[in-house]
Length: 514
Image (cartoon, rainbow, N blue to C red; front, top):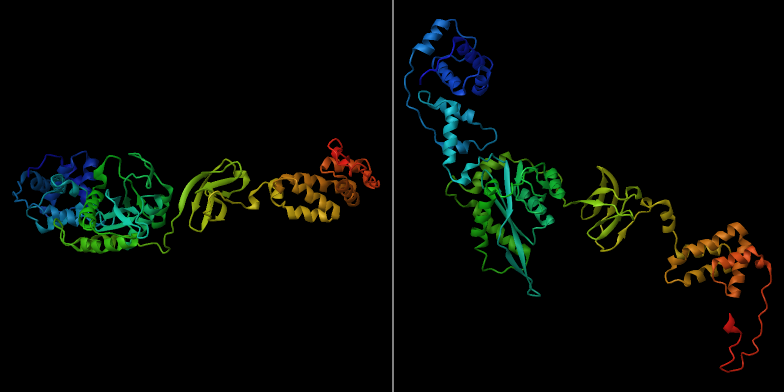
């Protein structure tokens, strides 16, 4: 190993920074403007000379350093090549580094080991020669790859004979290849999210990262650099304290584990079930669980042990614990407040404070409650309703005028009118009966009852009595009776209809002119 010429000052500085400041070779090289390989050469030479601390012993003056480093040719070594597949396996735990493996390698072969930089270069070169599925270095408990199989399974309705398809969800741990699979009726948001929750229960823990494809249930807006996650999916990640990192569009290597896992499930589970008939989703999933257990316990060809043994040794100890509270599916949706101060969720309408009209809110809908937030502040809570076209309205959300109108009912108007007298009550009932819907006469009823404040209760009762007797039906006519004082006048005598007993087509009688 030829020693590159450097000054005595830089040689001492290399030794000081390495043993006194404990800096890495790269940081030393950057500080002294030399290459990292030169630092490695002098560090290895120092180790062979027994120099392992700073400051140096008294025997190491400039003359002895000059002779030891620049005038003495080191003996050639027979370098030992590490077993790179073992190195890759050792790197899977999160705490393991190449630096530590290189140091252990140097301790095992002190007379023939590569420098750290050369060790790293050889390892990377070996990685490039492996199959694409082996290039990614998956840390223990770090990544869970998720996707759906392309083929579907058939479920037959035993009563109607109708055939319904089921999707197969697949999840694979990156380091151990431990696999989870289950069938759902769709790839819609709720099925997608709840499959994740059941997968975490199956694993008994939570990985650091979840790598999905860019399907609509996972990503609202696909983008190579900043994909926009579905808010419901994001809330699942927050509940389990994990991170969603969608694969880049058109980059299958980002989710290669999922691609291989899907292929294995299709070949070793779905292909075996192709000739069987299933009459419920539960029946299908029980069969999948049986075959999945066999798949995870089968000996792997390119790795030691089975998927299960690898998972228990590598991934499981590194998984985060499950949260104390179980996950409940929550639909998270951005909604806009309509001009009637209601928002819509699955064709049912829920009220919010009227001051938020035309504002955008975030709705969280569980199976029991609908909670609405504006800028992170809770503004309304309603019991969940599935009545299509129905309204859930709270009085406190209405404007004052609407609150009062909401309190109007036919029974209430009749009760108000009864306080003035029987004639007033009968006239109000008559007003409401003239309309197809009682609500259409509420304003007229309010107009009649307001006359009591202006003309006294007694006069209003007398005016309504006269109106009923004379066939008056309009509010303005009752008001005219009061203004003209007719309420205190005797009723006109009923005139006899002398022609009523004559039956002739040219004789109409008094009633014709009313």
